[in-house]
Image (cartoon, rainbow, N blue to C red; front, side, top):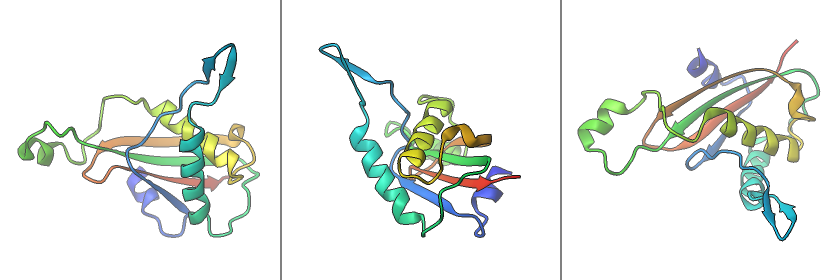
Length: 141
């Protein structure tokens, strides 16, 4: 189901190249909190804005559909890579923290007004030769 939705060309899809990343808590340095992912959020946010195609900020309930294509370890043999390609990935980072990073960036670059608008979400994490994150933000009734 998720793959067919991700491949639906009528929906506005975002693709973030590189290994999927998880959201991180705020860091603490000399009794001050700071965002550990400022540069990551800025770079991924620019990537998302380039793919936005002038779409307005989402203001209604949203369905978030995401596919996390995880890299395969270099230590795996070609035979194991062939066997595992397209299979679900049970390792870290966990899905919820990867989703949270997408949500935070989408709010920061004003693709959606607030991440509380996400009423439904679906996601899969699978192994692939081309690590990336693909996702769709779709307004629902």
